[in-house]
Length: 296
Image (tube, rainbow, N blue to C red; front, side, top):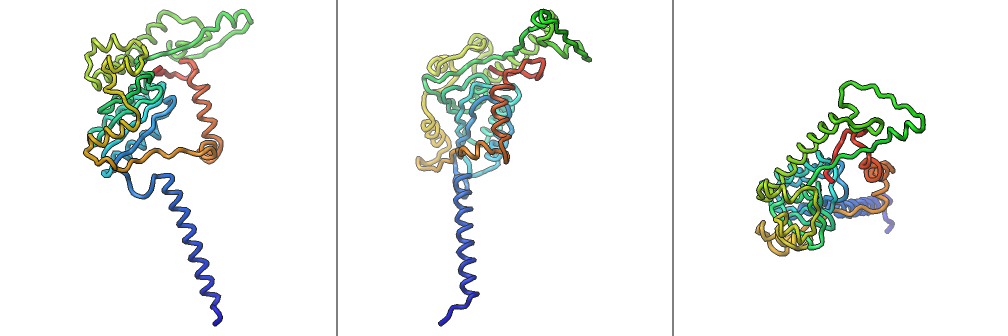
C-alpha cells in the first residue's frame, strides 16, 4: 500500500517540532538549572564591583520565589564602588528577612566584597581568605609642575568652587583636602556602622578593627568579622540545616558562560570591551574626572 505524501509530511513536521523542543529543553535546562526552581540558590559576587544591576535583579527574583528557602552568596571580590556595594548589601538585608542567607568567601572578600558578605546571617571563610579592608579611598595625581615644564597651560571653566577638587592640573588647596576628607569620613562611617550592626560589634571595637587593614580568614574569625571556617559546600550544608531542608535538597548553581557567550554578551563585543574598560581603565580614573569613590 502506497503511503500518502501528507502522512509523510506530517511525520517530518512532528519530528522537526520534537527536535526543536528538545533543543529548547537543553537550552533552558542549561541556562536555568532545569524547569522549576530549587530550594537553595548560589549567587556569585565576583570581581570588582562596578554595576550592581544584574545582582540586584537576581536577588529580587529570588526574593519573590517562594520555593527558594536559602541563598548562598559566593563572594570573591576585592571591592569596588561605594554605591553599588551598598545597594547589594541592602538587598541582601531584605532577602534574609524571609530566607536563610549564608555568605561564603572565596580567595578575596575585602572592602566592598566584605561589606556585602557581612549582611549574611552567617559568614564562612577559608583560613587563607583575604578579607577586611574596611575603609574608603579617593585618589588623584598632580601633574601641574610637569605641565609648567612643558610650557602647557591648563584652562578650567567651572561653576562651583569644588567642581575640580582633586584635579591633577592644579595644586590641591587646604579647602579641597578638607572637603574630600569630610566626604571620605562620612562614607567610612556609613561602612563602619553597617558592619558593626551586621556583626554585632561595638563601634569602638570596629574603629580599631577597620582602618583599611586586611586580614586573613583566621584573623578575621578572631576579630568577629566572620563566623566559622568552611568552603562553599560547607556553606551550602549550613544553609540546608538552617532552612530545615534535607541533605539531598537540590542546589541551583549559577550558569557558567562559555567563551563565545562571554565575548558576545550584549549581542556583540561590547560586553567584553565594557568589562575590560571598567576593570583596567575606569577604576584607575581620578576623582576629578569621574566624580566617584570606592571601597578599596
